[in-house]
Length: 338
Length: 268
Image 1 (cartoon, one colour):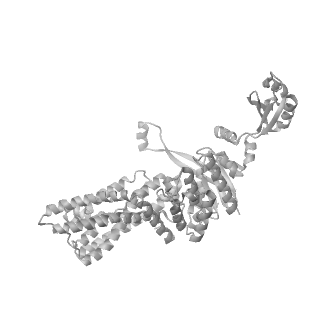
Image 2 (cartoon, rainbow over the protein chains, first blue to last red):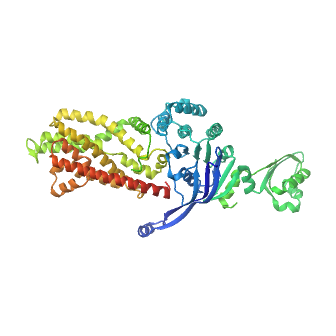
């Protein structure tokens, strides 16, 4: 049985609405207008124990709403969700003990004292025996390289250091479910990478189930074989990350480097000559330079197009790539279509 | 109340210790706050002792006023619930999410802050009051009054805390609910025996003070300690104090349950 089962889960909010300006403000005192926002619309999915899943989507797509529903902070408007055998919004202590949620913009550490003190309180709140607490903290501190920070008040830590300490805080009670809401927000590239490594290692060692939201595709590529794409409250895609690209973008990029021994060579003209008219509509020149060309080619035409190119042009190197996932996703955000 | 879910006492105690260590970090700030809260009763102490001179006013001699106001300083400090202000902040800022994810009720966090605060403030207030007592020579209270003072003081704290708590919980519905806390402070100032002992208030105000909850948050235990109340008045006082506490507890429980339901519906 899956750890998380979600069926037709919906959440809508009624938000007060008014036009800008003083007159509108006065009018809204009398009768307020409301607008219903569907933050999540009939989502159905399930997550297995030990899986790492990413929620993707632009700001306001419904990612955080989904996490909050699964963590029991929100009551759904319709549908069903069962997490580790519990109804999340009943917030039973046994359920909460199995769960941890880390948000990049929130803190559960106390500002003015060293992180170790905050961890100890959390251990007491979650009823973690002292020996287990020591073992857990030792492991996490070693994995994250935190030895030097333990005596410093949290307010003297850098953002990255603080985030590591937040992770420890959320793992002190050894949750089986970890929700990460933008965990790498505002961190530099190498700190992001180290946090990702840690999350991957921790998942492997302890079989913790991870649901992650992030705006950094690198987080998702590195951690989550499976993604759920949410847009305007609707679940648009549920499957492997690689296939998301194929699914969303029915083309590939062909990069060509050309030999330079034929002076006066005009790439565009050569290209026009090499592409048969039957394929013309499927091939698009994206970029050209002295050195080479980048073409966008329909997946179905790849083999035929590369064959022609190799035959007709002085090719030094040829590479066929998937378009960068960011670009693909950006297209959805912009156009809202799959 | 529903917020009192089964939780490990160890967890709650640890929260108190933790909040306390954290607050000791800026004890200077808290000492200043505590000093600020001492000032109004001190002013009234000097006003009334000067007014009394060698005479008595409404049965209060100079030394009774000293006892009354020194006890009031301590009682005010012990019952003042500064965590009530935090409750609304936490709801408005979404910080409540963090607390709701924990397997113990958020009320524990508030109570921990409350107890930790008392300890920090009293480190300052007790020595200062003792010093003032040495200088101003109050009338010493009777042992029997002292024994009644303590439970009345405890009930006063609970009443002031939960009265402020239910007001603070209105933050679930209205963003500026803490204006009501300012109103509570003003009413306490007027009706709980700060400006003047309730016995010295003019008729209408005095009966309002007797029936409303505010006197039972500060003034009532102090009046007991200074021996100003007869047995019947003490019995009625305890009954009213307990009654208002029951009301405050019921409202807190109700608003917490309703508020949480609303919070889960509209999103924190």
